[in-house]
Image (cartoon, rainbow over all chains, first blue to last red; front, side, top):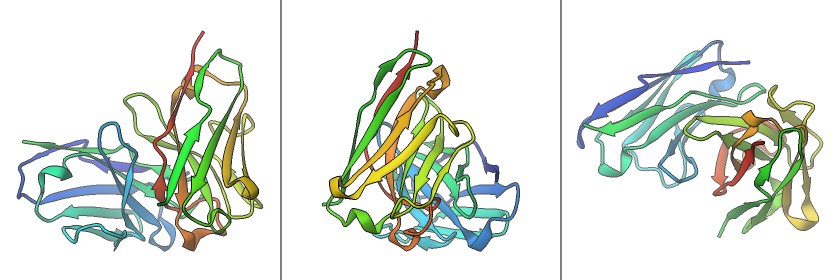
Length: 108
Length: 124
C-alpha cells in the first residue's frame, strides 16, 4: 500500500501568514490522484482539493494544491481564523486508499 | 440538500458483530460510489471499505478484510457495513462518505460528501 507522510506534524502560524503543508508518498501516486481534507474538532472532514490541484466546489482561492509523483503540497496563502484545523492528504490512485497522519495547523 | 446519515453504532464485546447503515438523500444514490472511513479516538482517518455504483466492485483495508462486508441497496438509498469478529482496535467513529460522481465505476476515489458518523465501541 502507498504510505503518505505529512509534515510538519504541527504548524504554528498567525492569521494573515502563509501556510505550506507537505505530503510525501512512498511510491508514485498515479494520475495525481491526491486529495486534501480539512477537519475541525467534532466535525467530519471537508474536501478541499482533488486531483492534486483542483479546488472543490466553494473552496476559497487562498487554498491551492500542487505536486505530482511522490511530493505534494497544500498552500494557504493568507490564513483566516477559520483555517486553523487538522489537514489530511489522501491518495486514491490505488487500493487501498490511504491517508496521511495529518498536520495540525494551530494559532501562534 | 445532499445528506448522509449513519446509524447502527453501539457498544459490543470483542468477537461480536454489528451492522452499520447509511441513509442517503438529496441525490441519485445509484450514480455514486460510496465508502466507509473510520477515526479512532484522537487519531487520524482510516479508509475501511469502498463500493462502486452498482456494487460490482468492492475494496477493503487489510485490517478488516475477511471480517467486514460492504453492501448497498439502491431501492432503499442505503449503504451498509456488516462487521464480524470485532476487536478492541475497531473502536472508532465510522463515517459514511460519497465518492465524487466522476469515480462512479471505482471502489476507491476521493470523497466529496461525508456524514456525521456513528460511534462503535468494542469493549469487554
